[in-house]
Length: 148
Image 1: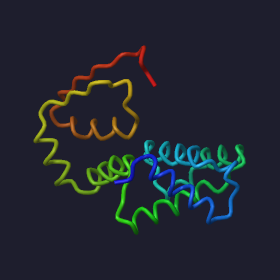
Image 2: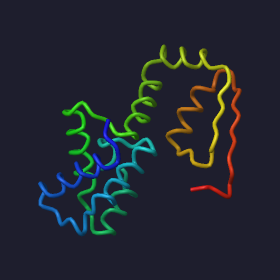
Image 3: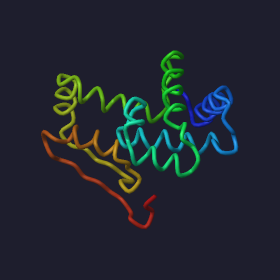
Image 4: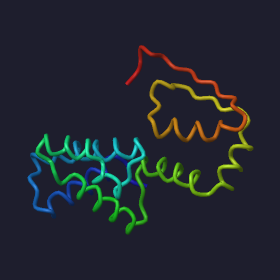
């Protein structure tokens, strides 16, 4: 399991190995872009096809973010590692691709409660929506004054 520091260090190594300027390609900025993509259900294969994301990267002088994301995913896979966003993305992919698993958890949880809902991203919301779809018993608690 890679924490944020592990992920940023790996990204930093990839940037260096690709011969990119580490002032332009700051590991924290690239990590943010990768996390943002995952939280919007965009994996490393789909990222280069997302015109808006690619144009934003180019506008900030970082046209190689998609390549870094691809290499990051490849190295995580080879190492048998995941970051927090991967756990969520892989869970979503599992629920999408294996109906028996989705069915099992939809029927296991009759009620779903989410605290700090204002901090929920699209990926997390998508997972919860799938789980609560059968019984449609969901309760959320949030504070819009604390929204991120």
